[in-house]
Length: 190
Image (cartoon, rainbow, N blue to C red; front, side, top):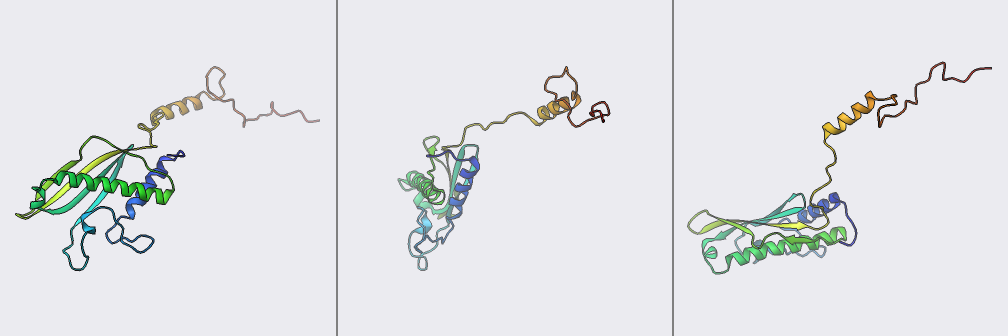
């Protein structure tokens, strides 16, 4: 990333990129958005609609892309099913990078964690099945562990000690009281 971004800005950019990927979304020119999903293939009116989509979840500096879709059982037993699902997840990741760049004018760095995505296939009937696949990526620009600082109890304990030690010379960190004035502090009147 060219310039340092706030973690919140990165998360908002990713959220905006995901929000533009609904079924039937159009780009600036009025053309349907191509993500790489099965629902984009074929004719919308004449062909049977294929139900598939994706979502993301964020945890620390990791984004998990989740793909789900209806497939026929013959596609599962075909030769390249796992490669096709992995390619769909890669297409979704590249779409998110492209949309993030368009929205925020900054680049999004996603580094794949692990070699293969997790793919889970469930049989719905003798012909149809449902696939759920997930793949995790490390987001560039977000630190691995955020700065946590002190716990609430430690901060409260420290502030109570400062309050109790206020005005005492022997307590380190205590401030001298400035807002209390008595008759002896006033200047003599003439």
